[in-house]
Length: 469
Length: 83
Image (cartoon, rainbow over all chains, first blue to last red; front, top):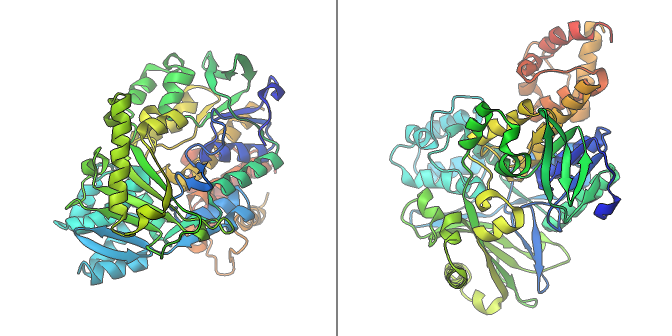
């Protein structure tokens, strides 16, 4: 449980700023290694974008849409078995667009079968493609784009490109113009065994993580916005929070990488060479979401767990982010999601640009939000014709909402493009004791990427702390 | 540490990571990754455990030296002479 800020002491071994899955995991690992850890979170709730909110008896999950099977091993190793045991498969993944309609378990075996039967691609081409992407590493050549990769194996097949790319664009904001290796790594992760979710919902997961942190002795404070990371003579000294200086030889920032550099540490803490690289980091797009809650006594038949829907003729990353995009996913939460709670909720997600929404005045913003909800309900009626009468709560989130709750630069939902990875990974070579963990480089994003990156960062912290002994 | 002790140390660490790991058919000169279903995160765990147990600091650029059981032993032997 979080403790009042007044209970914090003046000195810790490690201060973690932000409690996204990466920050939580770093804090947990480092406490487990025996360090005295303080975790400071700006919001009232832990979890960062792994979050939820309650309305009229509904619990809405913001980013619980499906993660790869690798999460099982990761939770077992870096959290605990209880958390691992709550991971269950989502078996019904639906694609519905003008080019094709199909249901899949989203794994290599089923995709191979669909590519042969539905798309008439020769098995040898499919096998060669899967082998190619499975062998990709983050340090491989990054000049090839995903578009070039697809054109090599499936030239002129915009339907196949859509099948392969659309889900990944929703998962991490990447496009056909990003490095093929980022695509290959993420896609292969999903293809190993399909899509999984956390039974009990995000609130249960974060609650279990908070208990584990407490067991390992992490001091947690919520509603605590860190104003500054204090750097002196190339070394971290600690942080300033609510007017108090708290010292620590190591600070792990789980704030966005751009926030960490420009707003928390300040660019004067870094060399010109480093800042040249940092200035080039592009943040990813943001999102819009529409949350719909079904009346207590109502239900509906199984329409699939995760639906990739679009009425746009072809896949196009610009169309996906357009203010009036015709493409969206529906994550459907049946009573099985939260056994005992027994409610139905649906969350529609769209990719979106921060600037499109930032430019509206208050009145226009409200009108656009209403129009977004209306378009979403109309789209949902294709799968659930009677749904309007069954809904008793609906509201929308925009890039401005994401920006307000997470403080992410331009409300980004997926961290940064590929170049952010190197900046994030090399920050501790610039400033002794300053580490970053969070969604960067496309590959280190999503729930699995964030947790694994938390482990990687804590390894760096541990190496640094031991080198001081 | 003798070469055999180092070998046992590595296998012990891997067993902690994955209790189902089957060492019976393990070939010491072949990549551990292919034979034991280890991924890059597992190798990071090995690095962290070696640091914890023997204060060994293995730089990132040396991680490829841990690819096979034999290469692990070759790499670690001079570092663990006094252990």
